[in-house]
Amino acid sequence: MNIYVSNLSFQTSEPQLRELFKTYGEVASVKIVSDNFTGRSRGFGFVEMDDNSEAVAAIKHLNNTKMGSHFITVSEARPRGNRNGI
Image (cartoon, rainbow, N blue to C red; front, side, top):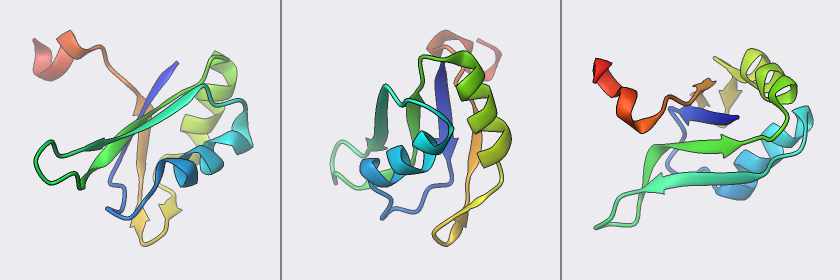
């Protein structure tokens, strides 16, 4: 399952995000999205977990929890074509 994580601190690293999610199971991949021009984090990213039950548990337990100085939002990622009702 692909998981969307938002409201990340700009200093959050992919290894830190992986560490947070691996408490709930095996993490297949982590990607924090960066600005193409500045290289700075855009404050959101994606975590891929192959086991759906582990992913659901991670979403349930990590949504609205504090990571660093920010409360993160965690949800199942929507397919790219389904943004804003499109």
